[in-house]
Length: 404
Image (tube, rainbow, N blue to C red):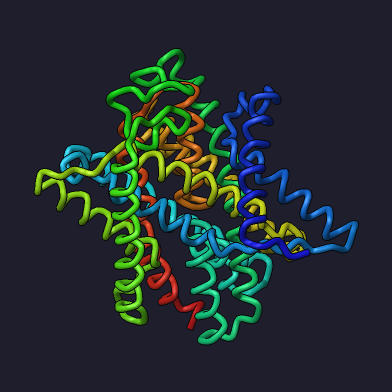
Protein backbone atom coordinates (compact mmCIF):
# COMPACT_ATOMS: atom_id res chain seq x y z
CA UNK A 1 0.00 0.00 0.00
CA UNK A 2 1.68 3.20 -1.20
CA UNK A 3 0.69 6.47 0.46
CA UNK A 4 1.60 9.53 -1.61
CA UNK A 5 3.06 12.74 -0.25
CA UNK A 6 -0.25 14.47 0.50
CA UNK A 7 -1.65 11.36 2.10
CA UNK A 8 1.50 11.09 4.22
CA UNK A 9 1.01 14.70 5.34
CA UNK A 10 -2.60 13.93 6.27
CA UNK A 11 -1.56 10.87 8.28
CA UNK A 12 1.18 12.84 10.05
CA UNK A 13 -1.34 15.53 11.01
CA UNK A 14 -3.72 12.87 12.33
CA UNK A 15 -0.85 11.31 14.30
CA UNK A 16 -0.32 14.66 16.07
CA UNK A 17 -4.05 14.97 16.83
CA UNK A 18 -4.15 11.40 18.17
CA UNK A 19 -1.08 12.17 20.29
CA UNK A 20 -2.75 15.23 21.77
CA UNK A 21 -5.88 13.21 22.56
CA UNK A 22 -3.90 10.35 24.10
CA UNK A 23 -1.86 12.58 26.39
CA UNK A 24 -5.02 14.41 27.47
CA UNK A 25 -7.02 11.20 28.00
CA UNK A 26 -4.44 8.83 29.51
CA UNK A 27 -3.21 9.97 32.94
CA UNK A 28 -0.08 7.80 32.89
CA UNK A 29 1.16 9.57 29.74
CA UNK A 30 0.75 12.93 31.45
CA UNK A 31 2.34 11.64 34.64
CA UNK A 32 5.44 10.48 32.79
CA UNK A 33 5.47 13.56 30.52
CA UNK A 34 5.46 11.66 27.22
CA UNK A 35 5.64 14.07 24.22
CA UNK A 36 2.48 14.11 22.10
CA UNK A 37 4.23 13.31 18.76
CA UNK A 38 5.88 10.30 20.44
CA UNK A 39 2.58 8.99 21.81
CA UNK A 40 0.74 9.33 18.49
CA UNK A 41 3.70 8.18 16.41
CA UNK A 42 4.19 4.95 18.33
CA UNK A 43 0.48 4.12 17.94
CA UNK A 44 0.77 4.65 14.19
CA UNK A 45 3.94 2.54 14.04
CA UNK A 46 2.18 -0.27 15.92
CA UNK A 47 -0.74 -0.15 13.47
CA UNK A 48 1.67 -0.40 10.53
CA UNK A 49 3.46 -3.26 12.31
CA UNK A 50 0.13 -5.05 12.78
CA UNK A 51 -0.73 -4.68 9.10
CA UNK A 52 2.71 -6.05 8.18
CA UNK A 53 2.56 -9.00 10.58
CA UNK A 54 -1.07 -10.09 10.42
CA UNK A 55 -2.56 -8.66 7.20
CA UNK A 56 0.67 -9.18 5.21
CA UNK A 57 0.34 -5.62 3.93
CA UNK A 58 3.21 -3.14 3.97
CA UNK A 59 2.31 0.53 4.19
CA UNK A 60 4.89 2.62 2.33
CA UNK A 61 4.73 6.34 3.03
CA UNK A 62 6.19 8.98 0.74
CA UNK A 63 8.71 10.58 3.09
CA UNK A 64 9.99 13.23 0.66
CA UNK A 65 8.86 15.96 3.07
CA UNK A 66 10.61 14.44 6.08
CA UNK A 67 14.14 15.67 5.34
CA UNK A 68 13.05 19.24 4.42
CA UNK A 69 10.99 19.43 7.62
CA UNK A 70 13.94 18.29 9.72
CA UNK A 71 16.28 20.74 8.03
CA UNK A 72 13.74 23.56 8.36
CA UNK A 73 13.61 22.82 12.09
CA UNK A 74 17.41 23.04 12.34
CA UNK A 75 17.34 26.26 10.31
CA UNK A 76 15.00 27.77 12.92
CA UNK A 77 17.35 26.63 15.68
CA UNK A 78 20.12 28.52 13.92
CA UNK A 79 17.95 31.60 13.38
CA UNK A 80 17.08 31.51 17.08
CA UNK A 81 20.74 31.26 18.19
CA UNK A 82 21.80 34.62 19.55
CA UNK A 83 25.58 34.56 19.97
CA UNK A 84 25.37 37.13 22.77
CA UNK A 85 23.12 34.77 24.73
CA UNK A 86 25.42 31.84 23.94
CA UNK A 87 28.35 33.83 25.28
CA UNK A 88 26.38 34.49 28.46
CA UNK A 89 25.68 30.76 28.86
CA UNK A 90 29.17 29.74 27.74
CA UNK A 91 30.44 28.12 30.96
CA UNK A 92 27.26 26.04 31.27
CA UNK A 93 27.49 25.06 27.59
CA UNK A 94 31.09 23.89 28.03
CA UNK A 95 30.19 21.88 31.13
CA UNK A 96 27.22 20.27 29.39
CA UNK A 97 29.35 19.45 26.35
CA UNK A 98 31.85 17.70 28.63
CA UNK A 99 29.03 15.63 30.12
CA UNK A 100 27.79 14.74 26.63
CA UNK A 101 31.23 13.73 25.32
CA UNK A 102 31.86 11.54 28.36
CA UNK A 103 28.65 9.64 27.58
CA UNK A 104 29.79 9.09 23.97
CA UNK A 105 32.90 7.36 25.30
CA UNK A 106 30.91 5.26 27.79
CA UNK A 107 28.41 4.20 25.12
CA UNK A 108 31.21 2.89 22.92
CA UNK A 109 33.04 1.19 25.79
CA UNK A 110 29.84 -0.56 26.86
CA UNK A 111 28.91 -1.55 23.31
CA UNK A 112 32.35 -2.96 22.51
CA UNK A 113 32.59 -4.82 25.83
CA UNK A 114 29.20 -6.50 25.37
CA UNK A 115 29.91 -7.34 21.72
CA UNK A 116 33.15 -9.04 22.72
CA UNK A 117 31.40 -10.83 25.59
CA UNK A 118 28.89 -12.27 23.07
CA UNK A 119 31.70 -13.21 20.72
CA UNK A 120 30.54 -10.97 17.85
CA UNK A 121 32.52 -8.40 15.88
CA UNK A 122 33.26 -5.42 18.17
CA UNK A 123 32.21 -3.15 15.31
CA UNK A 124 28.64 -4.09 16.21
CA UNK A 125 29.40 -2.58 19.61
CA UNK A 126 30.25 0.73 17.97
CA UNK A 127 27.10 0.54 15.85
CA UNK A 128 25.12 -0.04 19.03
CA UNK A 129 27.03 2.78 20.71
CA UNK A 130 27.47 6.42 19.78
CA UNK A 131 27.50 5.72 16.01
CA UNK A 132 23.76 5.08 15.80
CA UNK A 133 22.49 6.38 19.14
CA UNK A 134 24.01 9.83 19.53
CA UNK A 135 24.64 9.87 15.78
CA UNK A 136 21.15 8.97 14.61
CA UNK A 137 20.03 7.47 11.30
CA UNK A 138 22.23 9.61 9.05
CA UNK A 139 25.46 9.06 10.95
CA UNK A 140 24.63 5.39 11.50
CA UNK A 141 24.01 4.75 7.81
CA UNK A 142 27.18 6.59 6.81
CA UNK A 143 29.42 4.67 9.24
CA UNK A 144 27.61 1.42 8.43
CA UNK A 145 28.71 1.80 4.81
CA UNK A 146 32.28 2.47 5.98
CA UNK A 147 32.27 -0.63 8.20
CA UNK A 148 31.07 -2.76 5.28
CA UNK A 149 33.45 -1.35 2.67
CA UNK A 150 36.61 -1.04 4.77
CA UNK A 151 36.13 -3.60 7.54
CA UNK A 152 34.06 -6.28 5.78
CA UNK A 153 31.17 -6.13 8.28
CA UNK A 154 28.10 -7.46 6.51
CA UNK A 155 24.66 -5.88 7.07
CA UNK A 156 26.29 -3.03 8.97
CA UNK A 157 24.03 -0.36 7.46
CA UNK A 158 20.87 -2.33 8.20
CA UNK A 159 22.02 -2.89 11.79
CA UNK A 160 22.86 0.80 12.18
CA UNK A 161 19.40 1.88 10.97
CA UNK A 162 17.72 -0.59 13.31
CA UNK A 163 19.83 0.63 16.26
CA UNK A 164 19.03 4.27 15.46
CA UNK A 165 15.33 3.40 15.25
CA UNK A 166 15.46 1.78 18.68
CA UNK A 167 17.23 4.85 20.07
CA UNK A 168 14.70 7.26 18.57
CA UNK A 169 11.84 5.41 20.25
CA UNK A 170 13.52 4.97 23.64
CA UNK A 171 14.89 8.52 23.66
CA UNK A 172 11.35 9.85 23.45
CA UNK A 173 10.00 7.42 26.04
CA UNK A 174 12.53 7.69 28.88
CA UNK A 175 12.97 11.48 28.96
CA UNK A 176 9.67 12.14 30.72
CA UNK A 177 10.00 9.44 33.39
CA UNK A 178 13.58 10.56 34.14
CA UNK A 179 12.35 14.15 34.57
CA UNK A 180 9.45 12.98 36.74
CA UNK A 181 11.87 11.07 38.99
CA UNK A 182 14.23 14.03 39.26
CA UNK A 183 11.41 16.46 40.06
CA UNK A 184 10.83 14.47 43.26
CA UNK A 185 14.43 15.18 44.25
CA UNK A 186 14.10 18.95 43.96
CA UNK A 187 10.73 19.04 45.69
CA UNK A 188 8.46 21.95 44.82
CA UNK A 189 11.10 23.87 42.91
CA UNK A 190 10.07 24.47 39.30
CA UNK A 191 10.69 26.80 36.41
CA UNK A 192 10.84 30.57 36.54
CA UNK A 193 7.40 31.09 35.04
CA UNK A 194 4.25 29.16 34.34
CA UNK A 195 4.25 28.01 30.73
CA UNK A 196 1.66 29.25 28.30
CA UNK A 197 -0.99 26.69 27.42
CA UNK A 198 -2.98 27.81 24.44
CA UNK A 199 -2.58 31.50 25.28
CA UNK A 200 0.01 34.07 24.35
CA UNK A 201 3.64 33.25 24.93
CA UNK A 202 5.21 34.87 27.97
CA UNK A 203 7.45 37.79 26.95
CA UNK A 204 10.73 36.21 28.04
CA UNK A 205 10.11 32.72 26.66
CA UNK A 206 12.53 31.36 24.10
CA UNK A 207 11.17 30.33 20.73
CA UNK A 208 10.78 26.60 21.36
CA UNK A 209 9.68 26.68 24.99
CA UNK A 210 5.95 27.08 24.40
CA UNK A 211 4.85 25.05 21.38
CA UNK A 212 1.15 25.47 22.26
CA UNK A 213 1.26 29.19 22.91
CA UNK A 214 -0.20 31.58 20.37
CA UNK A 215 2.62 33.22 18.45
CA UNK A 216 1.65 36.72 17.25
CA UNK A 217 3.06 37.34 13.78
CA UNK A 218 2.18 38.97 10.47
CA UNK A 219 2.16 37.69 6.88
CA UNK A 220 5.20 39.88 6.15
CA UNK A 221 7.17 38.52 9.12
CA UNK A 222 6.16 34.97 8.19
CA UNK A 223 7.31 35.39 4.58
CA UNK A 224 10.58 37.05 5.67
CA UNK A 225 11.29 34.14 8.02
CA UNK A 226 10.35 31.60 5.36
CA UNK A 227 12.83 33.31 3.03
CA UNK A 228 15.60 33.04 5.63
CA UNK A 229 14.81 29.36 6.15
CA UNK A 230 14.88 28.73 2.39
CA UNK A 231 18.26 30.49 2.13
CA UNK A 232 19.56 28.39 5.04
CA UNK A 233 18.40 25.20 3.33
CA UNK A 234 19.86 26.10 -0.07
CA UNK A 235 23.22 27.43 1.17
CA UNK A 236 23.54 24.70 3.81
CA UNK A 237 22.94 21.99 1.21
CA UNK A 238 25.52 23.57 -1.12
CA UNK A 239 28.04 23.89 1.73
CA UNK A 240 27.48 20.26 2.71
CA UNK A 241 28.21 19.22 -0.88
CA UNK A 242 31.42 21.26 -0.95
CA UNK A 243 32.89 19.67 2.17
CA UNK A 244 31.63 16.13 1.43
CA UNK A 245 34.48 13.64 1.44
CA UNK A 246 36.86 15.98 3.25
CA UNK A 247 38.07 15.93 6.85
CA UNK A 248 35.49 18.65 7.57
CA UNK A 249 32.47 16.68 6.31
CA UNK A 250 29.33 17.32 8.36
CA UNK A 251 25.69 16.29 7.97
CA UNK A 252 23.57 18.66 5.88
CA UNK A 253 21.40 19.70 8.80
CA UNK A 254 24.48 20.94 10.70
CA UNK A 255 25.46 23.10 7.73
CA UNK A 256 21.90 24.43 7.53
CA UNK A 257 21.98 25.32 11.22
CA UNK A 258 25.34 27.05 10.80
CA UNK A 259 24.01 29.20 7.95
CA UNK A 260 20.97 30.09 10.07
CA UNK A 261 23.26 31.25 12.90
CA UNK A 262 25.23 33.45 10.49
CA UNK A 263 22.07 34.95 8.98
CA UNK A 264 20.41 35.70 12.30
CA UNK A 265 23.43 37.30 13.91
CA UNK A 266 24.42 39.16 10.74
CA UNK A 267 20.96 40.70 10.51
CA UNK A 268 21.07 41.55 14.23
CA UNK A 269 24.30 43.51 13.67
CA UNK A 270 22.57 45.41 10.85
CA UNK A 271 19.68 46.27 13.15
CA UNK A 272 17.27 43.91 11.38
CA UNK A 273 16.66 41.07 13.87
CA UNK A 274 14.67 38.03 12.82
CA UNK A 275 11.00 37.77 13.76
CA UNK A 276 11.25 35.45 16.77
CA UNK A 277 7.54 34.62 16.88
CA UNK A 278 7.52 33.57 13.20
CA UNK A 279 10.67 31.50 13.80
CA UNK A 280 8.95 29.80 16.76
CA UNK A 281 5.79 29.11 14.78
CA UNK A 282 7.52 27.57 11.77
CA UNK A 283 10.07 25.74 13.94
CA UNK A 284 7.49 24.09 16.18
CA UNK A 285 5.29 23.05 13.25
CA UNK A 286 8.29 21.58 11.41
CA UNK A 287 9.41 19.76 14.56
CA UNK A 288 6.00 18.24 15.26
CA UNK A 289 5.43 17.07 11.68
CA UNK A 290 8.96 15.68 11.37
CA UNK A 291 8.65 13.66 14.57
CA UNK A 292 5.23 12.36 13.54
CA UNK A 293 6.59 11.22 10.16
CA UNK A 294 9.76 9.76 11.67
CA UNK A 295 7.84 7.65 14.18
CA UNK A 296 4.90 6.56 12.02
CA UNK A 297 7.29 5.27 9.33
CA UNK A 298 9.37 3.15 11.72
CA UNK A 299 9.82 -0.44 10.59
CA UNK A 300 9.31 -2.10 13.96
CA UNK A 301 9.79 -5.54 12.41
CA UNK A 302 13.42 -4.62 11.80
CA UNK A 303 13.79 -4.20 15.58
CA UNK A 304 12.08 -7.55 16.13
CA UNK A 305 14.65 -9.13 13.85
CA UNK A 306 17.65 -7.82 15.79
CA UNK A 307 19.98 -10.54 16.92
CA UNK A 308 20.10 -11.16 20.67
CA UNK A 309 23.60 -9.63 21.14
CA UNK A 310 22.67 -6.34 19.44
CA UNK A 311 19.33 -6.12 21.24
CA UNK A 312 21.07 -6.76 24.56
CA UNK A 313 23.58 -4.00 23.78
CA UNK A 314 20.73 -1.55 23.06
CA UNK A 315 18.86 -2.50 26.22
CA UNK A 316 22.06 -1.92 28.22
CA UNK A 317 22.57 1.43 26.48
CA UNK A 318 19.06 2.49 27.50
CA UNK A 319 19.80 1.62 31.12
CA UNK A 320 23.12 3.47 30.89
CA UNK A 321 21.35 6.58 29.57
CA UNK A 322 18.83 6.56 32.41
CA UNK A 323 21.49 6.06 35.10
CA UNK A 324 23.83 8.62 33.52
CA UNK A 325 21.10 11.26 33.19
CA UNK A 326 20.07 10.84 36.83
CA UNK A 327 23.46 10.50 38.50
CA UNK A 328 25.75 12.48 36.19
CA UNK A 329 23.91 14.94 33.93
CA UNK A 330 21.54 16.09 36.68
CA UNK A 331 24.22 16.44 39.35
CA UNK A 332 26.96 17.98 37.22
CA UNK A 333 24.54 20.52 35.76
CA UNK A 334 23.52 21.80 39.19
CA UNK A 335 20.85 19.43 40.58
CA UNK A 336 18.14 22.08 40.08
CA UNK A 337 15.15 22.51 37.77
CA UNK A 338 17.31 23.52 34.81
CA UNK A 339 19.30 20.34 35.37
CA UNK A 340 16.06 18.30 35.25
CA UNK A 341 15.17 19.72 31.84
CA UNK A 342 18.75 19.28 30.61
CA UNK A 343 18.65 15.63 31.71
CA UNK A 344 15.38 15.06 29.83
CA UNK A 345 16.88 16.66 26.74
CA UNK A 346 20.04 14.58 27.11
CA UNK A 347 17.93 11.41 27.10
CA UNK A 348 16.37 12.59 23.85
CA UNK A 349 19.52 13.16 21.84
CA UNK A 350 21.78 10.76 23.79
CA UNK A 351 19.72 7.89 22.41
CA UNK A 352 17.73 9.51 19.64
CA UNK A 353 18.03 12.90 17.96
CA UNK A 354 17.85 16.64 18.58
CA UNK A 355 14.12 16.88 17.67
CA UNK A 356 13.41 14.21 20.29
CA UNK A 357 15.40 16.21 22.85
CA UNK A 358 13.40 19.38 22.13
CA UNK A 359 10.12 17.45 22.31
CA UNK A 360 11.15 15.96 25.68
CA UNK A 361 12.02 19.39 27.07
CA UNK A 362 8.81 20.94 25.74
CA UNK A 363 6.79 18.22 27.46
CA UNK A 364 8.59 18.87 30.76
CA UNK A 365 8.43 22.69 30.65
CA UNK A 366 4.78 22.64 29.57
CA UNK A 367 4.05 20.90 32.86
CA UNK A 368 6.53 22.40 35.30
CA UNK A 369 7.62 25.80 33.94
CA UNK A 370 10.22 27.47 31.74
CA UNK A 371 13.89 26.59 31.57
CA UNK A 372 15.56 29.24 29.45
CA UNK A 373 19.00 27.79 30.15
CA UNK A 374 18.10 24.35 28.79
CA UNK A 375 16.60 25.77 25.60
CA UNK A 376 19.68 27.91 25.14
CA UNK A 377 22.25 25.14 25.65
CA UNK A 378 20.71 21.90 24.35
CA UNK A 379 19.92 22.93 20.75
CA UNK A 380 23.48 24.08 20.06
CA UNK A 381 25.16 21.12 21.79
CA UNK A 382 22.77 18.50 20.40
CA UNK A 383 22.56 19.90 16.89
CA UNK A 384 26.10 21.09 16.27
CA UNK A 385 28.86 20.22 18.72
CA UNK A 386 27.83 16.60 19.29
CA UNK A 387 28.29 15.63 15.64
CA UNK A 388 31.84 16.94 15.63
CA UNK A 389 32.63 15.33 19.00
CA UNK A 390 31.06 12.04 17.93
CA UNK A 391 33.04 11.89 14.69
CA UNK A 392 36.29 12.43 16.58
CA UNK A 393 35.31 9.87 19.24
CA UNK A 394 34.45 7.19 16.66
CA UNK A 395 37.69 7.73 14.74
CA UNK A 396 39.73 7.47 17.95
CA UNK A 397 38.02 4.19 18.89
CA UNK A 398 38.74 2.79 15.43
CA UNK A 399 42.45 3.24 16.19
CA UNK A 400 42.23 0.57 18.90
CA UNK A 401 44.11 -2.68 18.14
CA UNK A 402 40.90 -4.74 18.14
CA UNK A 403 39.75 -2.96 14.96
CA UNK A 404 42.97 -3.46 12.98
